Amino acid sequence: MKGHSVQHDRPVGFILVCTNKSEKQMLSSLVFPQSVIYGHKVFAIKPGDYIFLYNLDTDDLYGTFIAATEGQYDPNLPLFNGRYPYYVKVKITGELKQLKQAKNFLDKIGISRKDYLTYKGISAIISGLNGNLNIKRSDSYIDEDYRPAIISTTLWDYHKQSYGVTPKGNNKYPGVTPAFIIYNLVWRYTKPGDLVLDPMAGSGTTIDVCKEERRRVIAFDIVPTREDIIQADARKLPIEDSIVDLVFIDSPYGDNIRYNEHPDNIGHIPATDEKFYDELEKVMVECYRVMKEGAVMGWLIGDQWAKKVFVPVGFKIYERLIKYFEPIDIICVVRRNQTSNTPFWHSKALQHNFFLRGFKYLFIVCKSYEKKYGNLKIKWNFYER
Ligand SMILES: C[S@@+](CC[C@H](N)C(=O)[O-])C[C@H]1O[C@@H](n2cnc3c(N)ncnc32)[C@H](O)[C@@H]1O
Image (cartoon, rainbow, N blue to C red; front, side, top):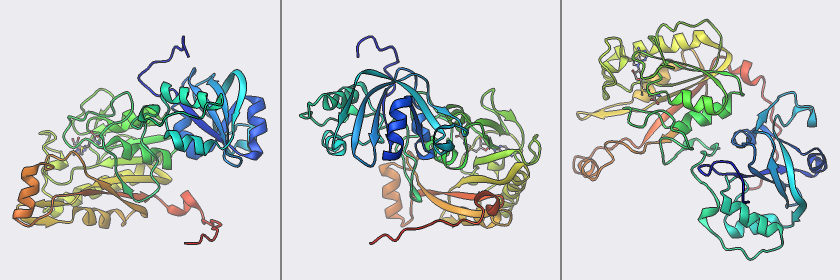
């Protein structure tokens, strides 16, 4: 692998998938199309990266390929009638090698086909393809932190505010949003090129995630912290009706954080005051106006326990949201890196018998569910428990 020119600060190997139906055509065309569930992975590929191809039906692994392009998106890709719109063109290096019972080998050395591979991981797999199966397991084969997973349950947890090589938002900004939340929403509810709005953008986490995932983005805040955030009140956005595909909003949760001194900052109003919800309801109405029919909104919010009073801020916000929107789901996001996550506060919580906040709500709602999902008829198989 000498002379390889890509940077060393990111993983450089990827395992893509095929089936019995697609294998032949992929190997002959050297175009590797993937379905939407692998879109986030295909978008991480840069020219020169190493690619292996895994057949999900036969458990065979093929290699070694080199990406000739970056990961691409084309909903009209002629191969397989556009069913697999994410793709990369590859070149083959040397002779095509095949490893049978690849899952066994990968499990043994500690690699899952979903992982992002380091140079060491690539070398280990190439050794396997060359018939050397006595490779030792090692954590250094994969880069666990390069990109978060797309989470399949309603409990979301990630150990860091940001991910990848470039920062997402500013982790020194009070109340900065964990970037993996926006990443998950963007991949679930938008396509490349769609327009994402953050009306209360803070340090710009939404902008950074959207740029990396190739979505268009527009961001506002009452006090912009950077040039690509536009000054505006989220209750009166200077944009047209019905143009946005996804809204992400991490609003103030009351007056617990001092973002800035602007008089129109909703974060000056305490969560115990009904006015707080009235003002955020105006933000909801404004978001509704600018969203397309069928567009989705993710609203992140936490409850409050302060001065011996518990306020179910989340439930109160949800009550307002469903006056306008249709529910899609409710996610519980584990809170990490809290200022209260100290031995002092943990001991106070036990001593005075209260709870520290352990989670936030992510309410996912839709402007007209039918428009987004139609009359959903999923053919379920019967799975034995
Ligand atoms: C929880 S922070 C957002 C954090 C952001 N998502 C990030 O990752 O940095 C809430 C933001 O709402 C903004 N805000 C408060 N009232 C506002 C209003 N009326 N219009 C627009 N933004 C407002 C605050 O200035 C603050 O930046």
